[in-house]
Amino acid sequence: MIDLNDPNVVAVATALTIVAGGIAVVEFTWKPIRGLLHRHDPPVATRPDIDELAQQIKDLEQKVTHPPEYLDGLPEAVNETLRAAYQEARILQLEGYQAQSVDKHREASERFTRALALADTDSQRAALRLLRGQSLHLIGDSSGATQDLEAALLVSERIPLAEEADRARAAALGNLGLVYARRGDLERAEEHHKASLEMNRRVNNPAGEAAALGNLGNVYADRGDLERAEEHHKQALEIDRRIDNPLGQAQDLGNLGNVYASRGDLERAEEHHKQALEINRRIDNPEAQANALANLGLLAAQRGRTEEARRVLREALALYERIGAGGVKPDTVRAALQRLEEAGGEEKPRRRARKRKDKEPPAG
Image (cartoon, rainbow, N blue to C red; front, side, top):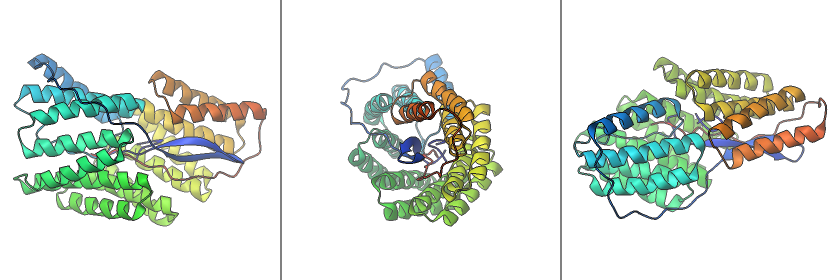
């Protein structure tokens, strides 16, 4: 569900690019570096600060696309120094998802390291390893991300409550699947997403189940198996509607839109991206709104509606700029606009070449 969308899956975003003979949507991946570790502890937050930060996190989690996660033991930590360290890191991470900011994810990973040194329980250690692994993945540190996520799997075996241990493992497996998918190892990605799906079903975690189904759908789309991709995204959408998860629904609809675009069914693709846009506007998710608008602008261009394409792409770019998003997405929207400006008037529809769009995300 994410990208030019991004739910509980995990984090995968997509970007737009110009290709020879037309405009295409391709997978977008962040590429950065592991940051330096701070060696001092954060100050102890007061109760009002902690409560205010907790509400800020809750608000962001409801409208920002992010991958599946396991948070047990952190939001309720008795150690207020630990809780404050977690909250500061978590806010940076969520803001990083929203603005596609490498710098925020790098800083979040450093702060998660601080919090990890303060953890009291194995559930807290598993959760912090998982969260830090997500940010390392999104700054391009594949090795560090894999190390953290595999460590989360190991630590989860020591969590006393079996259901909580399985929830931690399900999230770690799903995020490892995203790491392998980004490397191009679709076989291992599928293996991990299937294991995550099974575990989420076992612990009756429908949001995690929907995220795993969406991630499997993206793996199948990458392989060109559009029938299985559609089937899995539809199953994810059915679950997200049943549990009233609008963030997940928007991601599922966007992923289905990409499947239909890959088939050349541009009318159905447009219909699904419009539905995704409507939901993202309702929940005030500006990054996902910009993604949906970008896809709709490109579809309009493909169908020869040049003026509409220019208008919609400009709206997408304005949203990217408003949230401070940099990198591939806004740059490729600018390139698409420039191409349309150079082309002049209305153009004949072009055949749309397309590669997958992931949902990273998020779900946890």
